[in-house]
View 1 (cartoon, rainbow, N blue to C red):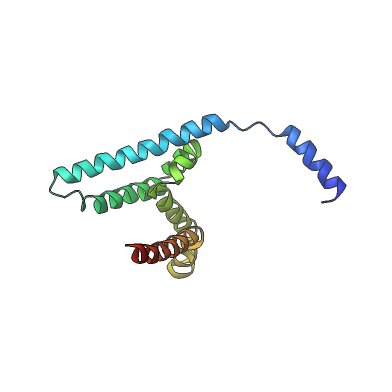
View 2: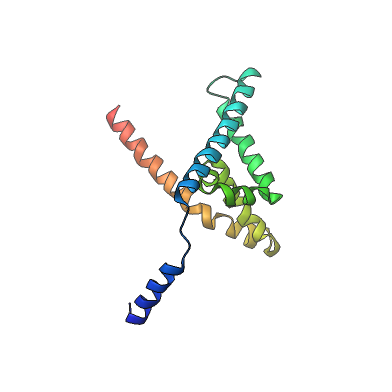
Length: 145
């Protein structure tokens, strides 16, 4: 970095407003917890309507994803995410939001090149990492059990 760039970085840091780290953490904690609480309530609802402990998880996740996509389509989830931060990005609802947002943004380019080609740009790395991690954990599980 040149001396002029270093000087600029120093000046920029003095002008930058402080980040409210503690309040951001509290917001993320409670908003993420609220999403998980909604998921638990949905799971209990499914268990009371004939699902078992093992089978209630799948429709719970499906409903959470559907709610996230609907709220994203209406522009509500983005406002929630601005306030909640990581609390709304970490659960499965955040993953559904990232895919739906990319699909909505590129829908004017067509289904194949627009939606299909751009929907996985942000979420694709998450899918690849999850698949590779599951592969290696499966190998380790097979070796040690």
